[in-house]
Each structure stands twice: as structure tokens, then as C-alpha cells.
Image (cartoon, rainbow, N blue to C red; front, side, top):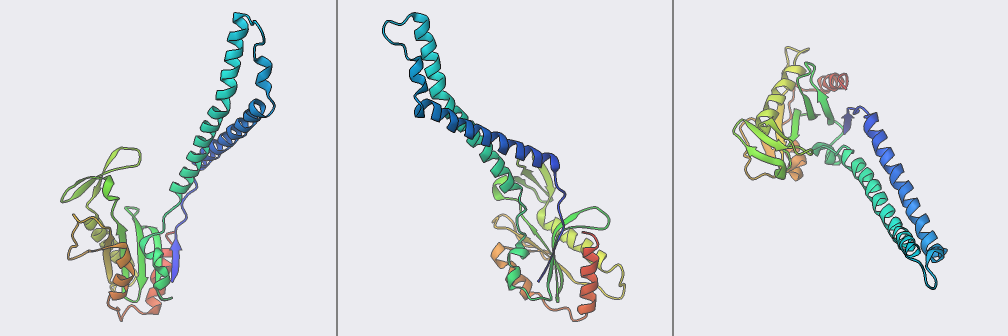
Length: 252
């Protein structure tokens, strides 16, 4: 199976911020170990321990130095761990997740191709995933996480984004159906005598969503079996399939 993936633009500002957070965290951790060594390894604080009948200023200064000496290693270590942890978490969350068909690509034959993040020629949409095979093509999209959905309307959904803001999106089933229609029109543009069959499916586990006549609703485990169940389009031969694959590659 061919995987045709679009390259995401590198956000240099975000990458620099992550690198700074990691470096600052690492420096703070080194500082924490250094202060801990001075305090507990060298006995430095014993120099500031009042001996005999100490005056009030000596007691105050000694108490302050002991407090700073005991708190500084822990404070540096906690802040350093937090900064390093936030940098690692950002890298982990920003890494693109494999799309449903890519995850099951090992079970597909070589006459299949999967294209991810395909921008349509008119610029109206970026289709998350298009599978091209002997059956024609299939548009596969995913539901938002169940916990992020605030309201499920008949035509649109309200979804809470990572920053806490509510964003309205088209109903996922209708959106996938319209994307399949756009892809069908696009693929048939240069070959008016042939129509590529384009199917639509939405992947999710939300019990409130039902399949429609134009769009399948499947779980992640059903992606492979669903693709294999699609009927072969005899007229979509190898030459036409390669033309469509080249067409998709030209947009990435």
C-alpha cells in the first residue's frame, strides 16, 4: 500500500519555545542538584549555624540562610521538572496521529493508496484521508472525541477545542458526504467519460451518531473490513487509478 502524506509546515516559533522550555528546565534541574550537593554534600550550611550565645541578627541571618538552602534545591527541581515535562508533552501531543486507514495499511494490497491531508483544488477543504483502490475511492473522517462535543445538532455540532473555546463544525456525517461529492467531481474532471465511485465513512464510537444512506459509520477496528467489502469498480483500471494517484500527489 502506498502512503501519500502531505508535509505539515514547521512552526519555527513553537519549536523555539519548546526548545527554550527544555533548556531552561534542564538548567534548573542541574542547579537543583548543584544546590543539593552544596547543602547536603559539603556541609556548607554548618558555617552559618550560630554557636554559643548568638545575637538576634546572627540567629535571623542563620535561619534565613538555612531556609533558602533547604528550599532552593526542591524549588529548582520542581520548576525544572515542570518545564521539561511541559516541553515533552507538547512534542508528544503535536506529533501527528496516524489516520484510520494508515493504521490498518498493513492489511491492504499494493493496489491501494492512502493520501492524508489532501487539499482540494478549490481550497475549500482539507480532506483528512482518501483511500484509492480497485473499488474507486473512499473518504474517511473521524469524529471529535466524545468528551469534547458540547452539543450535537441536526446540522452542526459545538465542539470544545484544546484552548477551551467552543467551535461550531458541520455535522460529521454531512461533512464527509459533501467531501466525497467534491472528491468525485475532482477525480472526474479530466475524464468526463468515466465517473470514479467515491464512498464516505466516519470513524467513531459515539452511540448518538447513526449511519446514513450516503455515509457509513464504523469503528476504528472496522476500517479494514469495510474497505475490503466495497465492490470492485471494473472500469477503474490500473491506468485510471495511477492517473488519480498522480492527481492527488500534485496537490501535496
